[in-house]
Length: 234
Ligand code: FPP
Picture 1 (cartoon, rainbow, N blue to C red):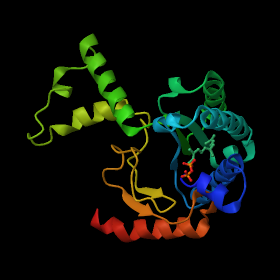
Picture 2 (picture 1 turned 90 degrees about the vertical axis):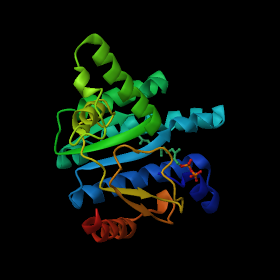
Picture 3 (picture 1 turned 180 degrees about the vertical axis):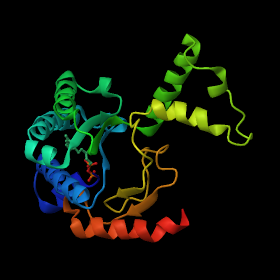
Picture 4 (picture 1 turned 45 degrees about the horizontal axis):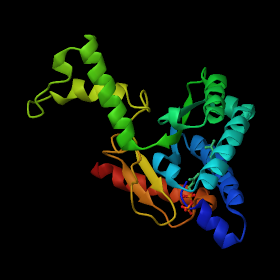
C-alpha cells in the first residue's frame, strides 16, 4: 500500500486523509481481486520498520488501523458474499493492545469462512517472520516433538529439502496459504522491502508507477496480464 503520503502531499490533503484513501483503495482492489478469482490476498499495511517513524505519526496510524479493523469486521455483506477469512500476519505483540483487540475481533467474526483469505501484514517483516518460524522449529525439536531428520537435512541430497521447508512453512504467519503467484508493488518503487521473501521465491513481480490510493482496476488487470505472460517461464 505504498504511496499514501505522497498521494496526500500531491493532492494537498492531510496525511491521514491519504491513508484513508489508501484504505478505500484496498477495499476496491480486494473486491476486484475476488471477482477475478484470486483466493488469497496479502497486503503490506505496516512494516516493523514503520515503527521508526515519529511517535505522532505511528500513533495516528495505529488509531487509523484500529478504526479500519473495526470497520472491516462490520463489512458483513462483502465478507459473506466472498467468504472472506481475515488474518493478521506479523509480530502482532508489537501492536498497541487496542489494535490487537480489533484484529482479534476481525479474525473471530470471519474465522468460519474458508473460500478466500485476506492477510493483513501489520508489524511485519519477512526476516522477523522467518526468525519466528526457525525458533518454533527449534523449540519443537528441543521439546522432542520434531525428529532431527526434519531439521538436520543435507541440502545437497536429492529430495531432502522438503520436510525442513514444510516445517518452516508450518510456522510462517501465512501458514496454510499457497506460495505467492503475483506480487504488486506500487508507487514506482522496485524493491521488495522485506515482504513475503520466503513465500515469493517463484512469484511474478509487477512494479507499477501509480500511488496506492490511485491503484485502479486497470492497474490490476495490467498486473494480472504481466503474471499470465511470465507464468510459462516459471
Ligand atoms: C504506506 O504508505 C502505508 C502505510 C504505512 C499505512 C497504511 C495503513 C492504512 C491505510 C490503514 C490500513 C488498515 C487496515 C485495517 C489494513 P506510506 O505512509 O509509506 O506513504 P509513502 O510511500 O508515500 O511515504
